[in-house]
Each structure stands twice: as C-alpha cells, then as structure tokens.
Length: 143
Image 1 (tube, rainbow, N blue to C red):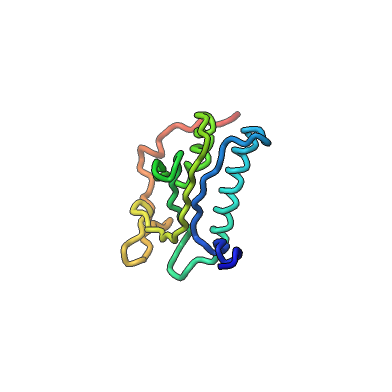
Image 2: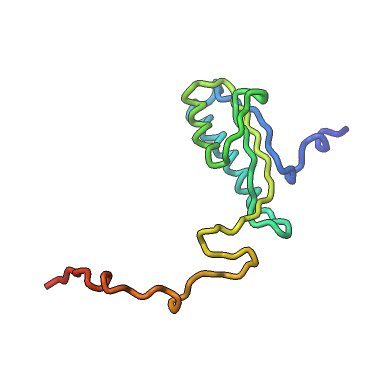
C-alpha cells in the first residue's frame, strides 16, 4: 500500500497520539506549549466542521495518561491543565486520545421550558406585584 494511503485522512474524528515531553533540541516549556497548541488546533478544526442534522454541538471524549493502558477519561476542559500537571510531574511521554462526537442539548428544568416545547417563561404581565412590605423598604437617596 502506498505511504500516502496509510496516513490517516484529515476527516478522521479522533486523535490518538503519544507525545514525548522530553526533547533534547527544545526547552521543556516549549515542548509542552507545542503539545497544547496541537490539541487546541485539533479541537478548533473539529468544531468548525458542519454539524449533522439534529446535533447542537461537537462534544469530545478525552483520555490522558502516561501510556495508552494507563490513560484515564477526562473532560475536554481538563485537557490543558492535565498536560501542565504531567509536565510538572516530569513524565517522559504523554498519551492523549480525543474522540469527536455530536451532542444534543437538553432543556433545563429551571428555565421553565415544558416537555412539549412551549415556553412557560413568565412575561411582565404575569410577574407577581410588589407587596406592601417590599415597597415600605427605605431607599437611600443622594442629596
């Protein structure tokens, strides 16, 4: 099989890669910044892709660890802080796995949206009127 066909395409919805945290040609801080930059670029590229019908956003399943076997599931927002922590603990390698998937938002119960999709939010007419105790509260005036 030709070499170019063995390489994964840009449309692959996942990253599985072991990054070396130690490079004799670069300072450790620059290596860590390079890894974080690569991960941020991948997340941005995936979020720019067109969403399938019925999906609200791109979500990511992430795993991070010293090796593929020891990798633990983490939230996407914890990726960069976890990379910093791995660098502080002087890991030699860092395994990162990111799988893109679609997500759908569920209506929140505290926003007053019913299950039929009709909004139950209160309008100004439906707001409770102020009671006498509320209006009798002293208000400081500037003189």
